[in-house]
Length: 313
Image (cartoon, rainbow, N blue to C red; front, side, top):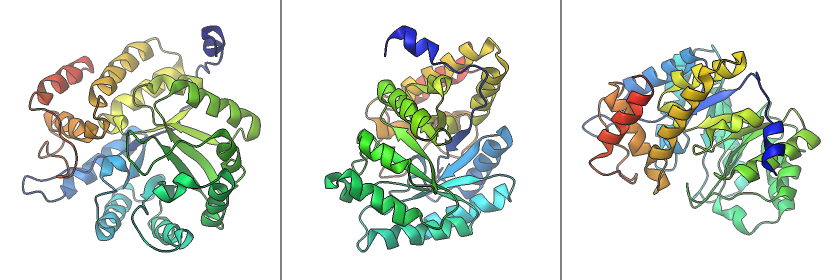
């Protein structure tokens, strides 16, 4: 796509749907900081963003089934039906029939009032497009709303980026209302949007590109770990875009600076960056990530302080 064509594809004054993948914070003794998590859900919801829980940012791959269930309960209790929320379905490493494994977790999420989003599993890696689409069709059957997820391997080894045949097939599954695209590749995501506009215009593409958050300008919505650093700033940016307010550019630049710093290699350590950032703002009791999460260096607080200053904190 040429620069001229890309510029012409911008969709000004579009209302954006945004979800923040909520960070799971911890107390000094290593316990889940339940109160701080509930405050984050409330802050995100009050800002006008949707909450996405039990995602990569919430350490879904490290939590026990009981802990994931507890997070669903805490989220439901705070949101209290005011709006929807999204919750991850994580089956990697589990033995048994995949349809059953997915559907059991999906049913639980729905029982708490959430919308399931399906993490991939390494079992998909040698499957054909037809096999993947068939699985999604069986898994989603009978559900009102489900989201898909294609996750680059820089985030997690169980992820994969689908080919166009698979994407077109997934768009044919009526219960599947959208997909989160986390390739960190602008060109690939723009192509997703082109396919969507032809095949199924109401299908939602949620950008997961924390290094290219301006993808919302081209028709993507978002489900971002970066948005949980400061959901109120993302909500303000989205309003500026809707209003055609020139302050959009400056705020988007500051948020992108935070994304470029927070999501530098190794990418999974962004969760530690997020904990450091939120601890600096006094929103969580410690800057500690989950013990299995890759860590940032000791000087992380200094650079996160600069990011916060640029955002007006």
